[in-house]
Length: 99
Image (cartoon, rainbow, N blue to C red; front, top):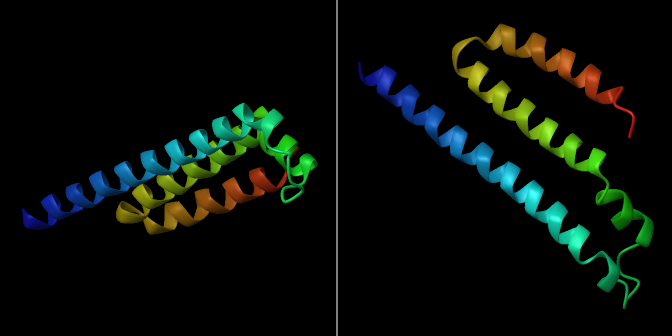
């Protein structure tokens, strides 16, 4: 019974960590988007890089990677072999993603 409770606590911690990663990704994207016109008083950050990071497909890519990482961690606790197969397929899909 204690092992089931420990696994439940681990899954809860992983879920909270995943939500935090997605929130950080979304907030950094929104901050970059909102401050885009005011950011270029200095040349520390290349304009093309920031413009690229504020495109919707970049946000979707970040969220997709976060979701894949969360799914992989959840599955790893129960079925490691299935996780490896799904992770390989996901990486192949992400490599082919048109950025």
